[in-house]
Image (cartoon, rainbow, N blue to C red; front, top):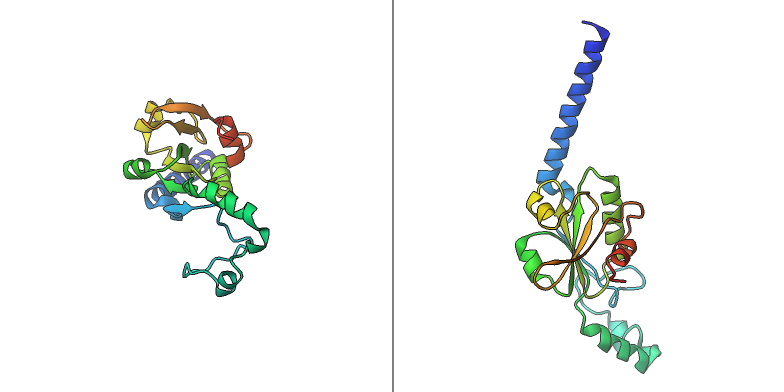
Length: 187
């Protein structure tokens, strides 16, 4: 065989394996969590979570971890209690219907480096209280892409209560949640 033919076959084989792997990851969900709920108002400053969900007895005896802060902390806690905790969930019709607060669609593709960076930032930083980010598969949700006129992966779309788009933004050059929310006018 000629060298050019061998190279062409090798490239074609790699392409088939790559596309097959991408499809398998897409169908399997890429091993990513189905939902990551975050809350900035109740986060443990040590970064350690009690897996039982029970309060630490030393916190209860001392009036909680912020008892020394006095009434100012209680007032801030009361204000934050009205907002739903921030959440980051996989898109589904039922997840959209159940989402509380401001709803933001994030059109994500597993093969997109900027999408992975934004995804990592959302998981690391958490979603602000009162906001639900729904992760939409860019490759399989063509109907949603058409409905919201999404032409590029990494697009975020803010929705009103009826599900209509109120703003759209592509944080492609700076894929962080802060940039995405600012671009949507939600900062």
